[in-house]
Length: 292
Image (cartoon, rainbow, N blue to C red):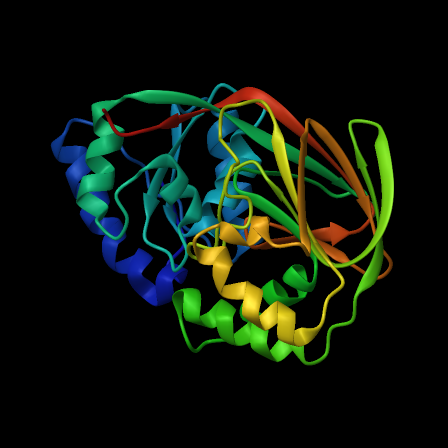
């Protein structure tokens, strides 16, 4: 079990012993992996996978799951999640119990597996990373960068405050977007590519995205006034923003995005500068999932 003690402002450290205890009660052998930083966590996770563990369990938020994913993608290792972070959008998409470490541990102990897609990003600086939920670039990535440095408020409120602050300084940029070979240019505020539907603690930016349909959903926000943006933004919590005239959507299996000075984020984690190539890997990952 990979533990990030800082996830959820300490909720991971508090709940990890509960999850470990429940798993052991259920007869599951558990070894705890914990490092001082993300690089150390990834190193421990990769070593565990190389040693042939049956499953790697991420105890934390989407950032911890993202770290664990970098170790397991492309292998046969099963991914488990004890979601005790601030957003937990990956767990939300999988229907996992959130903020209930014992119940999440029971899902793992029950052993029911689901095969889902993931996506791989190749960034301009040579960085490669996988993600499960959403990759974003433009205004939204700047919001994420700001939100990740904020200690208050927590949860969805943190992204809302970061959005309002960034709205005052961000300017639209020219995006070059290629979807399965079809290329277009458009000036816009942001772009999101969803393998899953939500990020930021329940913001359904790609509401029609499905984890196992072999496709990626792209949501693009055209250039607009700040007032229109402010009026439209709350719709993202229900996913109804995609019906607004300033929002366009499409789907594909291979998406390339470029825009000057922009950075890609995936599952809330910084990946690298644009341009990026994003490809879906259908049925490439096995995860523990609740029963029907």
